[in-house]
Image (cartoon, rainbow, N blue to C red):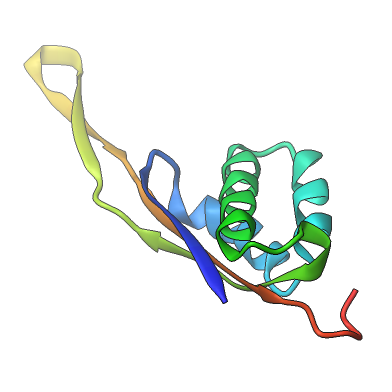
Length: 110
């Protein structure tokens, strides 16, 4: 089993988790192909992390299965936007930590 971790990515963890749940348990090659056509910022980033995990394992993508896809909360960047009458309103810019674990596929898994 091998894994790849991408930390402090400027992406909302809740939005990234939606994509990570779809991919979990999938064949790595099939997951990368399906994420290529998903119109979401998180899809492109998770696809790259899957490719990195497969490369770390030394397996071919068709022989690898995604055993775990986890998205954790990172630190939140807090910024302020000026508003009327000298006040300000906060803006929260979330970050995420993405972890993908890959293992060799069983003979029956495809």
